[in-house]
Length: 252
Picture 1 (cartoon, rainbow, N blue to C red):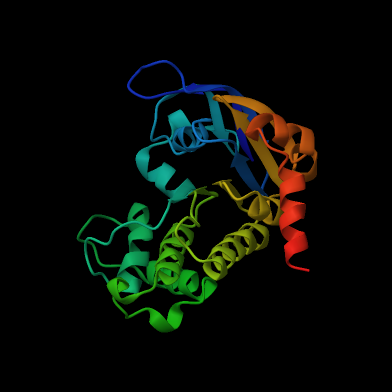
Picture 2: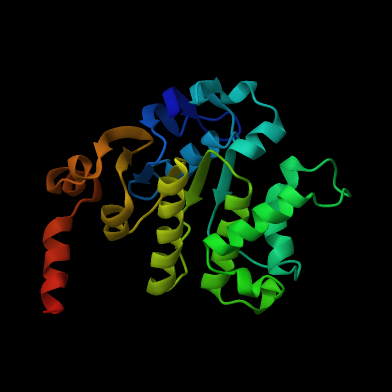
C-alpha cells in the first residue's frame, strides 16, 4: 500500500505548491490524479518518487520513503513520462536493460541471467520482444513509449508513476499503453499512480481518482464517486458531462 499523510512540497524552498495531501493506494489499483493545469499534479508525483523534497509522511508498504537508499527507491518506484527526445540510438533490448541498473553490481558489470530474463519478460508484456534488436531511433512514437514502459516494468517496482504518458500518442497507442500498465498492476498486485488529462481515459482505467485544485485535495475515492458532474463543473468551469454526451451524439 502507498500512503501519504499531510504531504507538502514545492520547488527551491519556495511557497508550497502541493498542500496537505492525504491519500492511499492499494496493491492492484490504478489511481489517477486529475485537475486543471497548475493544480500540482506533476509536483505531487515527483514527491512520490523522492525527486522533490517534501514534508509529511510518504510510505510504501509501511516503509518511509525518506529512509530508503537510492537503489532501494530504484527497485520500488519507476517513472514513465511523456515520450521525449532520443539522444543515443540504443537497441530496444539495451534501453529496457537500463531498468535493471539498481540491481547491477556496477556500471560496467555484465548483465546477470536474472536481468536478461526480466528484460525479456518485460518486452513480452508490452508486445515488443520481436523488436528487441531494433534501434529505438527506428520506432514509432507509440512503440517507443512501450519500450519505456517495458523499462519501467523491468525494474520490478512496487509502483509505476505515469506523468501524462499518453500525450503526443495517437488514440490506438494511448489505449495500448494504458492497457499494458493496467494489466501489469492487476496481474502482479502492484500499484499505478497516473497523472492524466483525458477524463475519458480516467473513466475507463482508474480504480481510484484524486481530484486536485490549486495544490490541495478537492476530493478522492472510487472513480464514480469523484467524477461527478457538480465536482467537475466547479473545478473545470464547464459542464463536462453535458459536453461529452453532446459529442457522443455526433457519433450516432
